[in-house]
Length: 69
Image 1: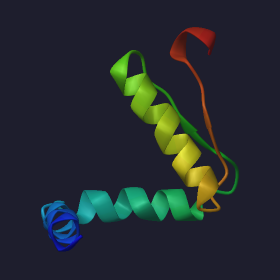
Image 2: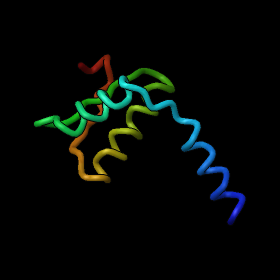
Image 3: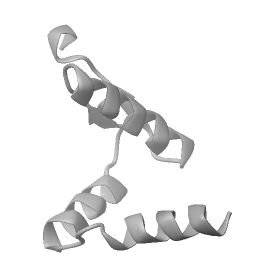
Image 4: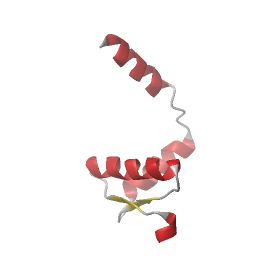
């Protein structure tokens, strides 16, 4: 378990947090409606999962496939 926690902590510490990251987080937090995610292929799978994660943490979000937009 210690190895897992150390690996997770290392991954978190490796995330580059700059003004762009902070601005993106601020925009999501201040969103008045739903956050829309989109993407095709693997990016679409990631966008879909991200929308689900946002919803599970209390931020309304939806995935929309670009071809269906």
